[in-house]
Length: 463
Image 1 (cartoon, one colour):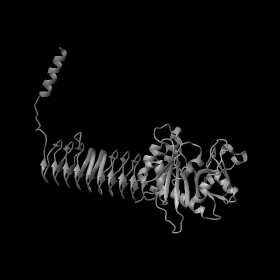
Image 2 (cartoon, rainbow, N blue to C red):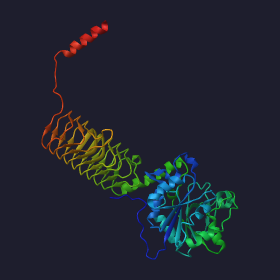
Image 3 (cartoon, rainbow, N blue to C red):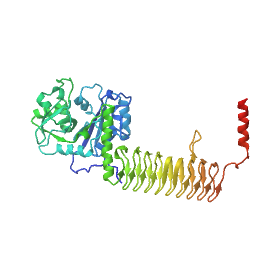
Image 4 (cartoon, rainbow, N blue to C red):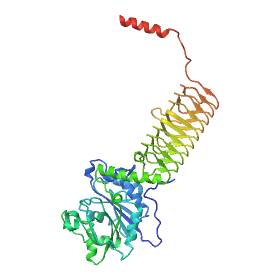
């Protein structure tokens, strides 16, 4: 049973230096055209910023600080429950200036500083650890930069380095010469720097460039001027894809989903039409699970071994037991728990309810705030009437009970084990075990009435 999220803990070497994480999230994100801050737009049901914070958290950082700017209130509210500090960049004067705003929060910290971007959410903990490890590798570079080689380098800053990754400088595209623009290794913006070097280098930054900004990348050149080399390590372009627009958001979502689908299949699940299945960041899928086309998992879903999720079903905040069957066209809402070999069929909605082992809820039914016992059968069209407009109430159906089609169970109500509720019943009182509940008026037949009625109406119509 695996989730394969990027935030699995990374083992700490006993002699490793402490790590601090600085996440830049001060940009306005105007291209998103949204009232929601750019870094809070979700990927797989979790805000981009929290994806990144979770991955960084796997390194057990001593301190984490998010640099905010426009829309700071939204960002602060998102990270406060995680105990993450924030620092405000009042003026947008460049990436170097942004990192400098974390100085007060990191006062007294001695160790390695990892610099990340809130709109680059898919960087894994393993890659972050590689950056830290390289900082302590050959010739102990002053700065470690994460580079990548996109299919179209476009306007990315270029990393000028030798074949061993020893860097000379990073050049922003608008400041680069034709020869420098011909380089294919590009700067992701992510860096690892010792705290003892970082702020001393930032203090020496200038803004004599085409944008008039304080570039974080210039600390590489400043360290070089001191005779200290820097290093670049590489990763794939997908891992450092940034999000500045809705289109790029969709692209990153697609890349994440593709990786998760591949992982699910590698772990022993069958996806009939992989491109049509959508996972949440924390979806847990067991072995020998079969997922049919057009299934969507929201946050908090778990599917145990051997279960089947039929087409066009939605599962969120729910647990599907071993060998259970869901759908097609079923909706499991938060709090739904299906036992071993339970069945929830087509056009069934389950919310905050336990469906016991082997129980069946096969057709056109709503089960909310309820407990359905093992082996019980809920007939087509049955509903639990759990809400009176003010409060929610619970329904309990005992093991082996049979609820006839088109019945309404008006909560709070308990149907005893082995009881039978006749079709079309409206049950408002408890039913004892093994009893029959028949709640409907007797059927009355009036021979010839329908013909007489039609004759009368036709006569009136003729006038």
